[in-house]
Every structure is written in structure tokens, then in C-alpha cells.
Image (tube, rainbow, N blue to C red; front, side, top):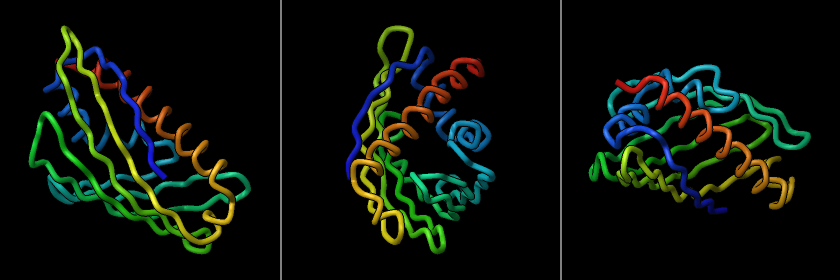
Length: 149
């Protein structure tokens, strides 16, 4: 599964990049996130409760950031385990482009799922993934603007 989208954020590229690296902001934006622990500048651990169709599960996972092209671009990879519900793994490439007083955030995300989740059907999975991504970025755009300096 692959998702592509972009969102305009009314904050500078530097501010958006800082917000993308702020565990408190990320935890507030990730739907169902109960805990987000930053182990280093490139390693995060998350606990997330998600409901996809009839399957509800608590996922524990790790995310690794590659900040080689920062702050213009970076990528992340992660994997999570939801016990009997299955697993998810994937990654995203994010690009930040300053435009006037704001920043255009573009992303391409890829994910692979297994277990009970994979049995639900691609239409339900893709629809849920798009909904979760939309919720994340709408909230992120709001918080990145609210907390800018």
C-alpha cells in the first residue's frame, strides 16, 4: 500500500522540522497514541491503540529517522506488532518546501501488514490509513502553527 499527499502549514520550514522532531507534538497528533518515547535523535518507541474495521489492537513499535537531507527532507522507517491482530511495517519520505510564509509538507508512505489486519481487505485498510494520515496532518498543522516561535 502506498499513500501520497501534501499539506500547507502556516509556519516556517525550520519550525515544521522542529515540530516533526518533537515527541510531545507527535504523540498529540498520532491517532490512538498512548505513549511516545524518544530514545535518541533518530530512535522513537510508540504504543498505539487502533481500530481497523472489527479489529482493535494495541501496537508496540519502533521508528528510526534518517535525517541525512534535513531540514529539506528526511525519511523514517518503522515496524509495529499488534499481537494476534498482526503486524505493520513501512516507511515514509517527507519533503519540506518553504512557500511564502508557510511550508508545503509532501510525503510518500509505504506500508505492509500481516495477520488478521491483512485479512480485512485492501479497501478497508487503505481507507483507514488515509483517514489516520489525514487526522495526523490536520492536527500536526494546527500544533506546528500554535507553538511556533
